[in-house]
Image (tube, rainbow, N blue to C red; front, side, top):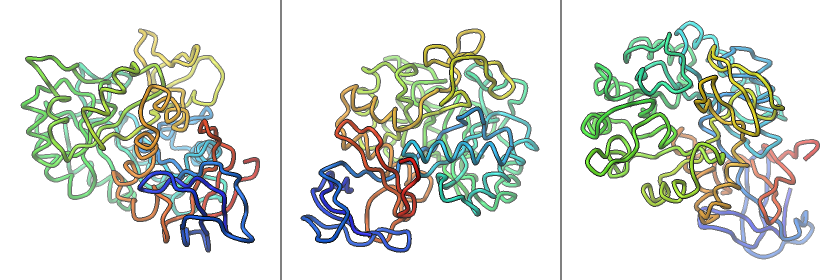
Length: 375
């Protein structure tokens, strides 16, 4: 197919032009109009968004290890312009994690056409600090265990793309040095000092899970994890932009602290796309009320937002649109080692794209060049 009259978001920003798709991938992308093509009437065309930190939606959670639930999650994401994702696990026993990872492997190999693509797994936990566990279940926390991680990695044919660890735990630096050969190592749910965090970054960690959340705040005498990550230029930081986890000023601060190194994420849980009510996360009760999901003690427990709404929030909070779009597409694709296939509109990449209004409302979604019904 050929499309024209589009404002195409390219790696260099928006371009007025045309593009082609063939056999599920992008063909030529060029300025100007094309004859005999589908006219998009000046609407914006974005690469399909890439969510590398999402636990659930539509009443389902990845950690349920339910193939039907994961498929339902993938359909919801695709309908909302998120065409690739890394389902994210919770702190649970290894056998339960293994069962969940099997469902991700199966969907990655046999994807229904109306589903988002599983492009990896984000293993969030169980190598976390008790003090900063947040909504993770403390009963299942463990010290870093490379052999157990490698067994899970092999069992899912290497689909794990990100694995999290708290730097202050015994053996964290050694774990990072070995695990980096298999997946991106991320610092998360930690009370580490600047020095402890820097040691793990130097050992090979290159990612920071949900910046500002489940970690010490910046202090001028104790810069902590955030200070160590900001000045380590190989580190990319996630940011939950749902309007509850991070104040708009802190969102703007994050993009300044990590120039070109922010990944927008949803951190969505099973109540995303659902009405207010009682839900569950990692064995803990969660209440969704007025858009915020919290544990009984008031702790935020993931978000009820999808990544496209987080993208719109970032722009509304003052982030330049081009920076925000890259943070939801190409940068997360790079973090999971998939930027050669997804994350931008370029010849040879998978033809996953979203046709949007001027205000970034989703109007049409294409996965592999095929338009989703109802979109």
